[in-house]
Length: 239
Image (cartoon, rainbow, N blue to C red; front, side):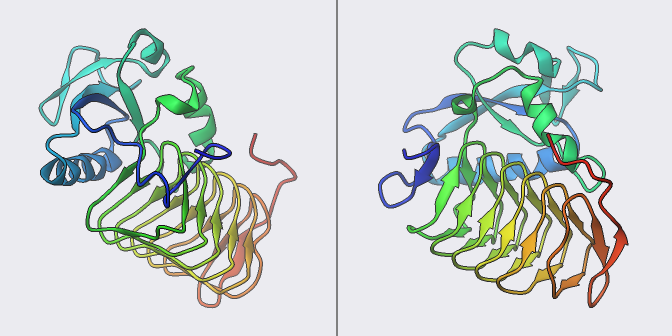
């Protein structure tokens, strides 16, 4: 460990060497992806994770989702003493709320598991934070830093020496070229491409299929090829 990141030369992942209980936050579409990642890890790591259930504020406690129980609300996470957690909540509509969602659990950063699909490629020279999920086919190059709670969707590419800020999400097939800086709690849409050496400010959204050729302001939305501003910043950063 160094500065809260996993340095892959010395610590390939923070998954346990024996089966450990894991709770998923949220029961929307991302939960399917997280379960797929867990099952793929278990197939190669002797059942490293045991998904014991979900926490969700929208489903009845005691109900089921994908054959596993809804154990409680997000704010009840603290009553689980030995479980690990992973956040599956976030979309193009709610990505800026991811810091508050995680904070609402009251859990420290080291209670969140980092999950890397065996069919993803993460360089031994990348730095990967806590609570990160890298899906099938993701490629994370050398010199990359993924902050805490980053979500890398299926088929994403993150080029060398880029930084993806904490809580940010890359949707399936997004391509981030080298030396890019993506801020905190951003969303890069499916199939979007970001040219090398650009900056995407905190809380920004890059629409699906967009081709970004210039810096993106914080809290703004860009769409199209080449990407143009659809919504400008309102003067508020992501807290």
